[in-house]
Amino acid sequence: MRLTLLTWGTRGDIQPYVALGTGLQAAGHTVRLAAPALFKDMVIEHGLEFFPLAGDPRQMIANETTNTRLETRNPLQAMRHITQLFAPLIEPMLDDGLKACAGADAIIYGPFVWAGAHIAEALDVPCMLAVLCPLYPTSAFPNPMTVPNSSLGGLLNRSTHTMSLKWTWFPYQREINRLRHSRLGLRPLRFAGSMYGACEKRLPQLMGYSAHVMPKPSDWPEWVHVTGYWFLPPAPAWRPPAKLVAFLEDGPPPLYIGFGSMHSANAEHDTTVVLKSLAALKQRAILTSGWGGLRPSDLSDQVFMVDAVPHDWLFPQMRALVHHGGGGTVGAGLCAGVPSVIVPFLAEQPFWGHRLHTLGVSPPVIPHQQLSVGALTAALKKVIHDERMQQRVAALGEQIRAEDGIHSATTIIEEQAQQRLTARF
Image (tube, rainbow, N blue to C red):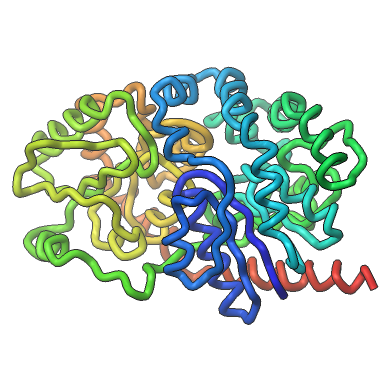
C-alpha cells in the first residue's frame, strides 16, 4: 500500500510517527511522511519520503507570550490560546495535506493535522487517527489536556472530553466548512472536532503508548487500540560524540536533565536551579539544551552539555531523569527502567507526570512555574535513594521492552485498511 502519515508539532510529536513509518516501510509499504519542514532531515535519515506541511512549531513555541499563556493552570485559557495559534494554519495545512495525500491508499494522521479525516473523506480512502495520549472520550478519567491529576467521577470525566472536542471545533467551524465545500467538494458539518472520524465515523484509532502505563478503559470501543510505544532507533549513520562517551565512562551513571522542545522565558533561572541542585547532591549530569531551555555558561567537569542525543541509547546509562513529561520522553525513560522527575510545562505533560507518580515510579510533579532548588533537590533525592521506586520502574521497563508497539500498529493498519479498501469494490 501507499501510505501517507500526517503529523505536526514539536520533535516529540513527530518522532513516533517517523518510527511508525519505518515499521510500515519495513513491512513492504511505500510511506510518505508529511510534517513541518524543520524535520525534513530526520525523516529522510530514516529512509522515508518527506513532504512539508505549513507552519513552524519552533517559532511558535519560542514566543514568550505564547509560552506564558500555554503554561497557565486554567485549561480553558490554554485551549483558547491554542485555537488562536492554529487559526492561520487551517487553510494552508489543508492545501499541503491534500497534496501530500495524492495517490495514497490510506492516511494515518495526528490530532494537530485536523484535515486528515476530511481529506480521506474527499479522496474516498481509509484513514486512521494516531495519537500519543488517551484523548478518546471516557468516563474513567478526565481529558488529559484539561484536568491532569484527579478523577471527577464518571459523568464529569466524560464532560471534560466533550468540552475539549467542542473547543477544537466551534472556533474553526465556519472556516472548516467553507474549505470542505470549496476545496474538497464535501457537505458542511454541524460538528467535527479534532477527533472527527475516530468519534463520529467510528474509524480506527491508534494509541501510541503502553497499556502497562495507562490501561484501555472499559468504555472505549473496539476500534480504539492501545498498541504500545512507537520507539525510533538512532539513524543508521548516527554515532555518539566521542567526548560524551568519554564522560560516561569516566564515572558512575549520571543524571539526565533536559526539557526537550519546551521554551522557557526563565531559562537562566531554570539553569541556575539545576546546577545548584546538582552541586548540593554532588551528582554528575548530562544536560541537553533543546529548543530554548538550559543554557549554562560555566560548567564543572561533572556536567556535560549536549544538544540532543537519542534517548533509547542514552537513557539506559542514566541514574535518573529530569524532563518535561512529553509522551515520547516518558516512554523512553520507562523503557529504560530509569525513574524520572517530571517538570511539566503544558498540554498533556502534567497528565503523564501524575500518572507516573500514581504508578509509584516518579515523585510528585514539579510544575515548571514552581521549579526551585529545594523542590528539585528533594525530588532527586527521592529517585536516587528510593529502592522500591527503582524496583517498580525496572519491572515496568521489562514489560514495556516485551511489547512491540510498531508491529502491533502496523498489523492493525494493514487489517483495517484492507477491510475498507475491499469494501469499496
